[in-house]
Length: 95
Image (cartoon, rainbow, N blue to C red):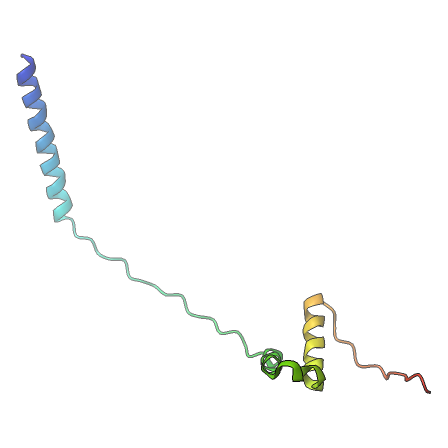
């Protein structure tokens, strides 16, 4: 066998393999996998969050609002991991 004949034979074999692979791929039926969506979890309603939103919308007036001051204190305690203690009576300087 001379070199030309070997090259032609190699080309024919390559084309035959390529055509076979193409036919196999075209006859394959791809069933798309069903899309499964995870259920969305809704966290329980947090009244503190709603109060903090209201205080945010009040702007600077919230600094004198007792409900906002209490909400901020509770939020701070939650963040720091403290348990909320009952309010102790405060003593004033005059008494």
